[in-house]
Length: 266
Image (cartoon, rainbow, N blue to C red; front, side, top):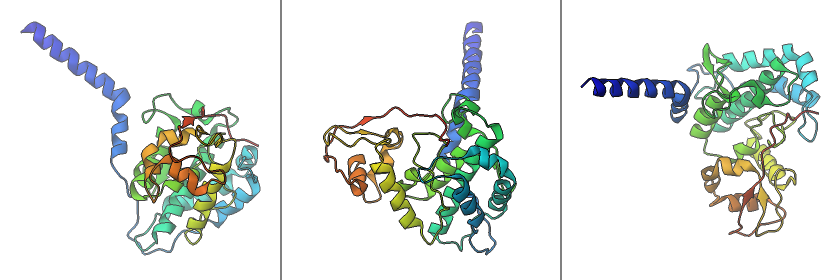
């Protein structure tokens, strides 16, 4: 009996210890919907647009020194984001544009707070969905705390069924899609997401589409394979061919390029 009690106690301690380090990811199964009941108009992203035009070049490379020097302007925009949550009266494209801009702008803020650095991954631990940079709850939205993964995994991917977001969300790494040097807006969102997807798919630094039967593609496709088998696409290959100028075979054997986490810095 004493042995059994010890075994039970040991099992509980082991489970508690494991959950302290490994069960944090469970929250990502629960959708979030931060919003306001106020009938407010969509947030203007003009301040973010101006910053992007100043500090992001046509290749999506970022002048982090410039952003750091202009951090008051970035913080002012993010304060607007934090206190101007989406309303039910907003269109779906207005809401999605808000969340994409928020994710990208908060990512920039996280980097410049610790700049200079070699990689955004250096700012957190190594346990995915547990203690990485993207799991840190440094984002304040209407008084509540959120992480980058909360925005991507629990809001954008749960609430908006659009696989093009993977060409628009930028995690400050070289293998990410290019950071668009203009803000996303509800009115132009479909056009902008198509342009981002087209640029990403055809960028030879992200995807090597020849030979057509054995292309080497971005690891992003491997991170979210099921996302690319919806929204009118039946597979990763089908999604790629929607935007590629050099088509791959529908049954192409895919290999995934190693992800380069070096900072996407000018």
